[in-house]
Length: 195
Picture 1 (cartoon, rainbow, N blue to C red):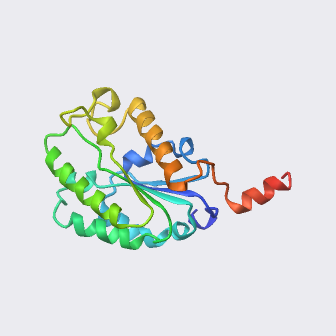
Picture 2 (cartoon, one colour):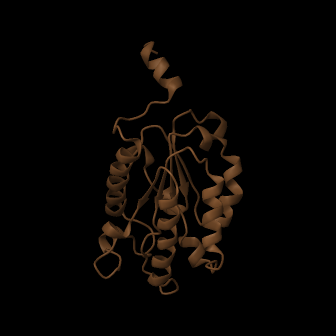
Picture 3 (cartoon, rainbow, N blue to C red):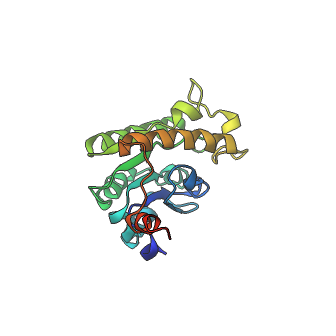
């Protein structure tokens, strides 16, 4: 499929939370490469396959909760650095914080520390926007807002996805600077010719 991705598409990378995201609600020409249970090591292995990243309009990244849940906290910072180095430097990146969860085996403090690393890496990259998902998915104590999550305490409910979609749409406007949907050149040419 990757070879058929048009120039100028918005590409979403991540785990099952991304997999469940209606990306067309954020960017009309989008590809969802979210994979259930994916961690950063698996994403690093997969990135060379996605040749479409180099011709993307933007990349949206949300990954890391599976690293923490799968006992892969050690080395996570280095893997985030590797992910960043593996993405095209000239393509805008929207990097989402690891979302809050309600699980006994994942400490909220570990997620907070992880998100600090993500934010720092994003701030060092040109044209990177950090999306602090905790601002709209958790309460003032950092606990999940129950209406925004399914009973498993990890995956988003329809209300949670709506909140995330709204935030991503606003962030896309900032990253693109013009707030206009970008139509891939080959489709724009066809539209101009009435096809």
